[in-house]
Amino acid sequence: MGKLKLLYIHNLRLALGPNCLPNALRFLNWSWYPSKSLPPSFQPDELTELSLPHSNIRHLWNGMKCLVKLKSIDLSYSINLTMTPDFTGIPNLERYCRSIKSLPSEVKMEYLETLDVSFIFAEAPSFRFFCCVLPGSEMFEWFSNQSLGDTVTEKRPPYSSNSKWIGFAVCALFAAHDNPSAVPEDRDLHPFQGVITCSFDGHEFFGPPVKQIGSDHLLLSIFSARYCKPENCPDDNLTKFVFYTYRGVGNNRCLKIKKCFFKSVNTF
Image (cartoon, rainbow, N blue to C red; front, side, top):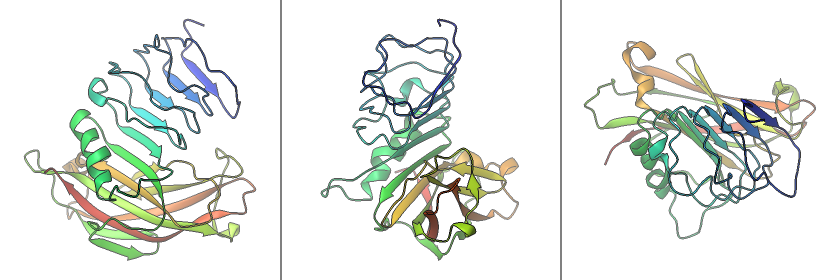
């Protein structure tokens, strides 16, 4: 087991978590991970992908871990998560994904950018993509461009290494949809799940899986400005962002995009 490089555990619910994990792991994908944190002795220097959806995780680890090869962290539907990991030792992180069950009433929606997004950009220079799912339909006031339906078009600022512009945010307001024939199936999803993707300039990004919902929700995605380098975007910088929805096989309750939004993100 000490040389194990891939650990994949899906939909197996255990009462107790592991006391140790192989440090040689490159891919750790464990849904319903039962422990409140990863084992203290776990130092996976080769780890590139960490996926713990629906886990009991409250925090990944204490303090800082140096994981220079880690590129993706998925903590979607880990509703007990109380602490964002220290990104200082993860300089090549490209994707951080989580779901937020609720926000305290005294916390303004605008605070989310300062709490999560700005911290990630500052601590992980290679960071490319962050997304989360929020309950409700209250939209961030700073979203200036909005459009009905699943598409929003925006002329992005030209890329410049000296610019205060660090990226852009897109958001989709979505709800339950009772017409499954209009939504394609994805065999990688659980039968009770759906998923939303965001596509632009030949890129496609997947949000966290979404269970059956009874009210409006928001998918917020933040993208690094590195996607707007000259080799990655059109000459006119005019970009169309399109959201697509998919459903698990046999799922008759799916998702529909009602509205979408765009906003450039600048440093303070």
